Image (tube, each protein chain N blue to C red):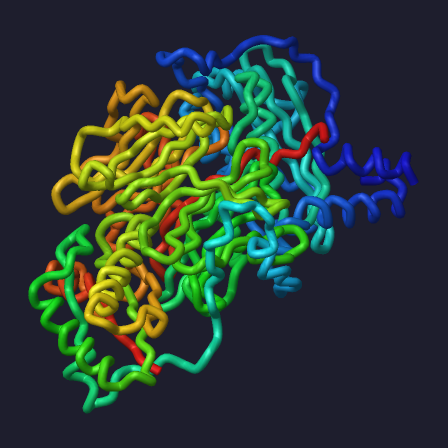
Length: 441
Length: 178
């Protein structure tokens, strides 16, 4: 059994196909002036006997193209002319027609072949150095036809990892709130907006989603038992537990980096919101803020030593940072008179937040010392609720720029803004998951 | 395909699907096990003794009847403010008078915000609006334990519009009774 189990684990993460490509740095992602690597990703080839009724051929190539383009480190070449020529559509180093690819400036090439049998899908994907004409990495994946997007994201991650040396966000998820008018629920979707799935269905007001650090649980506030109480839902078991139901509001959870505590906002009996630490196992509370003003929306620093939060102690909401041990507080935003929704970058040095400008809202980043103020959205509806990706390279946020609130993602400098949700309802409060890639565990 | 033996391939496919989708598939499962609601109350930490658990249940809250309506009027606030306006105080004076005459009636103060600003901050703001009204009524002599509060932030607008005319109506306290 043990032997079989090991074999299966390998299959899940793709079987490595023999590779000869030498280790080489293709993309220097630490350089701000890195040029985009020209990569071609032709439509996948149906190597089986069954017809491609699920448009896997174009879908998988498109997913990988979108992932790599969005990363900002690749320039995806138009491969349509070449991939339409059957003679040029080889999948392996010896069958690829290299001259056709190098002619259009291809430096990296991804080829894919798949076969469908019933609802099962087997895919072989290869990444080549098109200059050296060598295989860099190849994987064989087995799954269901409905897994095609997931498999494509997995291979995008392979490409990103092997060419840059870093883990990508292509297998992460985003939780968000969808308001259908009168009621709202928490949903989870892939980072690119695919596969949205409801995880609370209480026919109530449910909001403030926050991922646990291991990506297994989501904390949220719901009115399902009348009062706005705090719950934790285990995504894999479906078990939901109410962990705070003090009088007044129990909102804005943020998990500590060690996963043991949740910072949250309570108003208790007097209506004055303060930030507390809730020990998840003992349920003990420690009060962090203590002043007349509204304090809300805590966000932990990655080292667990500080918490960014919103306070109206200056007369209007601004972003502050508290040192958890000493409870010493410093203000970091001075621009504008309404700054909220801080989210501390996983890279440690920046905070993203939403700020009001006239009648609209925009997304800003600022260094934790209050310098390097940067505006990321401009003149496009109300932009709110920013949330960092786990690699600190992207930000999810909500925007009303189409007339309806939808979730968008963009790179950390504001480039590449892209709407990822559609359909009915107003979508807000995106929360980007931690890395969910369990490879090696 | 032919290189694999059939049984291993089948197990492999089942496993792949089961593991890679266990998260999402199970997410829609029905909730089970809401656990110990009084866990915090049982904690022995001295600093926690004063904290009250929220009280759910009890009789349903009702909208004011036609004859009560003149005493149960919504009160309105300025943007990002929870200070009572003179008009708000006048309305609360009337309500306080009524509550002092009808001592078996309990009141629920709902705090609301307009859609601008941040949902989370608005929950805190509308909580304060509800408490502004509660404190004012209590100062008039209405026993505080007859006054409950709930904060709805921007989640329950009375006017779904996106202009000041709608926003002004939504920045309010609304009152129910039982």
